[in-house]
Structures are given as structure tokens and as C-alpha cells.
Length: 340
Image (cartoon, rainbow, N blue to C red; front, top):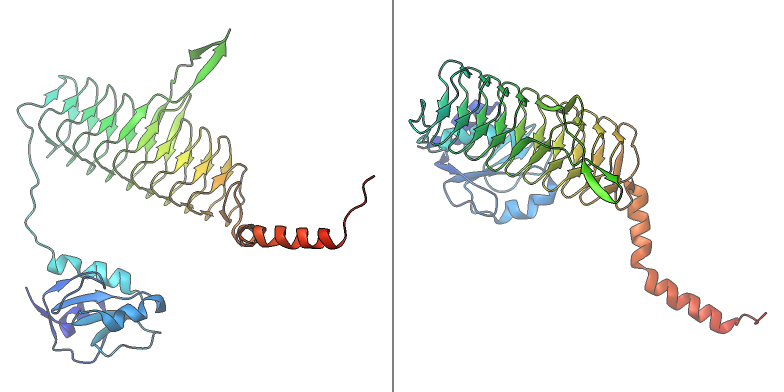
């Protein structure tokens, strides 16, 4: 399929600068784009790449100096680019429908309309599954679990007993929801297991990546708030509460009973200690180690996590330690200390 630049601009409410008759047949990243494709630039950091790209046209911010190529100017190039993706995406996909003969469904499980169960799916007793749910091959839904309408579980997902998933939730392969929290008590030198009696509640419109583990609560609920997005390989311990619309990036670990406020961002490999409160709109930088509670709107980095600007200054001084040592030794050689 080909579209002119003018046609694409009309779809996203953008303004064409240059030849609006340029024909576009595909989309790609700025480094990979070839003639006939369109790409995008979000800020001045990528201006040098815009000058070198082979793309026939670009989607550009309104406030940047324009390249020599035809462009569509928009307020948000990344969002505009995403909006155009379906125009050039191959529409052919494979989406199984219906209940596969090898799926095992308990007699008293309740299935809504238009439910899809792939090969070797297991649905235990008293499970409730809403309308339009898709459960991929080899997935398991445990006793009394509840899966809301429009939710999609990809192959090899485990939803343990009594877990509750809201509507339009996406869970990718290898994820386990509702396994026991890590709770043990040392009794006479031996680690005795503490029963984990609570559940996991995943609210509406949450997306959970591959190989994520979300532990059931010791009591009450482990909660993932509405609209939150969790990347691959994240561990969320028992009784954690994640607020609405949070972003949790790969390899984050959150210890038990910590509360994360809404719209927080936890970047890759950040570690959060237990029984803390992370305020709303907080950003925790990659590999930060948070050992204390944080007020709303914080931005922290490093270990132990400190306000980001302070952490940058500390790190700058750390890099200069060899120089500081040389200078101190030089001063000491000029002014030797008298032995007491």
C-alpha cells in the first residue's frame, strides 16, 4: 500500500512542509529507514540522524529546525508515528478462536461468550471467565480465579487460585500470577513456611510482560493498579500495592508490603526495599536501590537512592577520587604531620 505524504498528514492532523506528493510505502526507525519509508524525530538529539537517514520523509516536532527532506510537523511525533503504524502493518495475523479439544475445563467453571481456549489449557473448578477472553496454549487458571472480559493470556501463563484479573488485561508468556509470597519464620534454627492466604488483584487495562512473577498476599491483596504497564522479568512480592498508571521496567524487584503511588516510573533493575511508600509521580532511575520511603514527585538514583541531582554530584566526585588522593598526598608531603 502507498500513501502520499499529504494523505498521511491528514490522518494525524499534521502540517506538510515540502513535497506533499511523495509516496510512502512503509515505516521504520530513523537508522533503518529506506527510500519510500517514513520515520520520525522527537527532539534535537536526533537531528544529525535526520540529516543522514535514507527515509523519504520524516515526522517532525513543530519547534525544530527542519531538514532538507519533506516532513510532517506535529506536536507529538512519536504518537503520530504510532497512529500511522496500522496503515502499513501486515493485516494478516493468526488468532485462534473457540475451545480446543485438548483444553480441560472443570464442569462448574463459568465461561462467558466467545471465549477462546488454546491447546492444553487447564481451567480448574469455580473459575469465572468473562466474555471474549483469550487463553493461550498450555496456560493454567487455578481454582476460583476470575478473569475479566476482553483479557488476553498468551501461551504458558499461570494464574494461581483465587487470583482476580480485571477487564482488557494482557499477560505475556511465562508469567506467574498468585504464587506464594516469600514468607518464612525462623523457629529453632529452621525456616518454617508462613501460609500465604491472600490473593492477587490485577485491575483493568494492565499489561504484564513475559516472565513476570507477582506473589499472592500473606493477607488481603497484592494489587496492580488500573492501567499500569509492567515489563519483562519483574518480581513483585506479597502485599505490594502498585498505583494506577505506573510504569515498571525490566528486572525491577519490589519487596513485600511496599506501596507505589500512581504514575510512578521504576526504571530497569531498580530495587525497592520492603514496607516503604513511594510517592505518586516519582521516578526511580535504573539500578537505583531504594531503602527509604520517598515523597511524591521525587526523582532518585544511585545506591542508596538519593535525589538525582545530588547523586550526580556525588558520582562526579567519585570519578575524581584518584586525583583527590594524589593532591592530598602532595599536600601531606609538603606539610608532614608530626608524630604524637
